[in-house]
Length: 192
Image 1: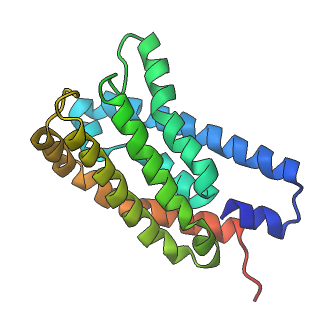
Image 2: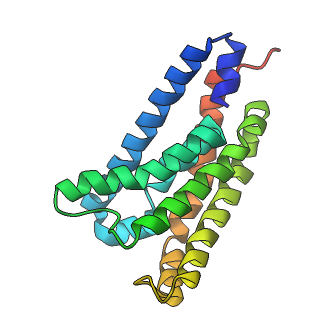
């Protein structure tokens, strides 16, 4: 969607790359900060329930398209892990990190595949987010099932966490598309 808006404004390649880089960095920063705020306010159960890192990644997918969003999805948990490790409390925890990288990369990729459709009609953000959520959570659960012997997680343990996260997914399934529709109204002006 952002690319469509920049193309309509005849932005140069340099301007497009600069804008996408700045938006990507802002979303990664938000993906690091939001979980910290939720954990401060609600503790670890709040993070499991509301899944705050997913919000900026889903926005990134809808806004940036698949290529740029994949970087946001993959880098968000890595940057969060590195920065929070410096403070002595890594989030996500190291055993969970590879699973979250895979999950958030899929979130970003799937939502990003809808970006051009969203530029045409903002309502496409609703199926984009829902499809991304389903695919990302399926990848997480599938990876745990495949690596059950090597990973410190079990399928029932992760399944219970997936169920606990349903309120966060439901909120994001509504909130992210509304944010995207509002951004689209500003960025992609239809000719009357």
